[in-house]
Image (cartoon, rainbow, N blue to C red; front, side, top):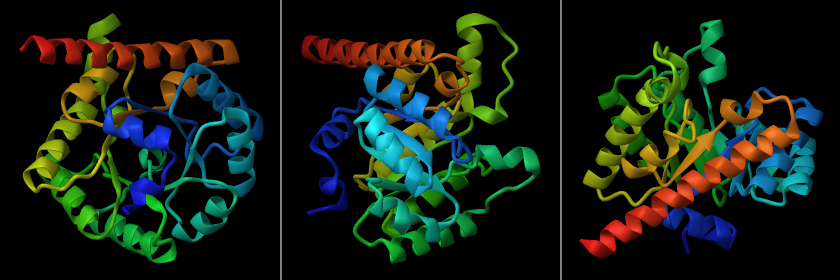
Length: 262
């Protein structure tokens, strides 16, 4: 049995159906009230997975509020065991976006080292690792392959923070997501070319408009952070998560119809 098969069945199906929706509260968001609101909205809105900061009490709070599986994110592997004991289903190295404004960047070698240490500490737990978007696309693809060789179960992209859209509306949303979509294409192609059957999560800068695009270019799921956690009310968060859920489900339905016609 693979580590992915230890995940809740609902989560396994979302990965297999390439429709996984993950809501991200933020690697550095340790505010219990904020995490509670986001967690509750994620559960009520139809998300499949919740990604929160790596803190045991937050894990317990998020599991209770959302009633969906929880992933914990950190760049300190030593924090993972207690979070898993508290109920986390997945551990994740990254996201790195929150570190860039302070001039903190992660090299491929450092990310590999963090992944190896995380796998050593928790050999039976599903491990996801974010590939830094500051690397060139070919280096992102190579790092993804190296991570899989070291026992990583899920690869995640990023890139939205590096994009500065100049257009309003839909075009601006596509411009915002372009680095993330480019990384998704590059890494997906590399994984398929190497016959690595590893799920790919596309995250950072995505929206209702661009989340289905990420799925169409190779992702098994999408991670949504700012589009949800920047909102001020629980009602707005729930509505946004529901909109994302509907966008992903509609895109999958259209893909099935097109496949049956062809």
